[in-house]
Amino acid sequence: MKYINLFFFIAIYIFPFNTDAQDYMIGNINELAGLNYFAKVEVKDELNEEGIKGSPYENEEFTNGFLVTINNTKYENIPLRLNIYNDDIEYQTKDGEILALYNRGIINHLMIGSSKYKYLPYSKGDRTYKTFFKVIEEGKASLLVRHKVIFSEARPAADYKKSAPPTFKRQPDEYYIKLEDGLAQKVSGKKDLETILSPSVKAFIKKNKIKATRLDNLQKLVHYYNMN
Image (cartoon, rainbow, N blue to C red; front, side, top):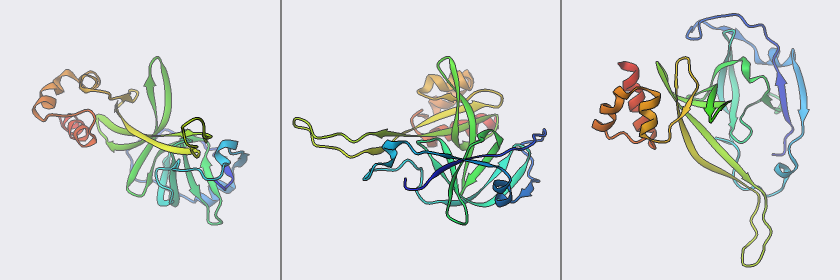
């Protein structure tokens, strides 16, 4: 975490378009960044500590990808990575600066390598939040994965317990399903699958022994739902 964490704001006019369209306008990410505003954001003190174990990233290394804005402009060949802890998409400029996307609302979707991501709303209790999801399956229903990382501060030695360094710890992935015009809803068990999709999937779940804790099972179920 030695670099300066920057946010950038992209001022952009929004026009309606078909989000499934494949004929994109091609933009230049260097021009886009140069035309907009950057604000220095100080990294929290605890994240500047030496000897932090673990990682806040899905992958420490930047991977070449692209992003598509809601006005259907595509910015190609950008080194990107997902900062799970900050819920940020970061990219590295040619001169080595690491920037974090500030205005997430301008993104329709982005690709990091072969993985697709969307910034989508999800429900939690009575409230609605937004986060970056990895998209596994799309159609009438979308199967989404939410990665999670927690940070634990350093713990000094006490009594019979050894000291522990500050640590980023990856948590189990969470699985969500989103219908076309709805919020992403967390899948915690088989009952959720019938509630979110339809009671009609009950027979398929039983026949194929679908487990709500297995991504490959959920992908099979959502694909079946989208095909029927």
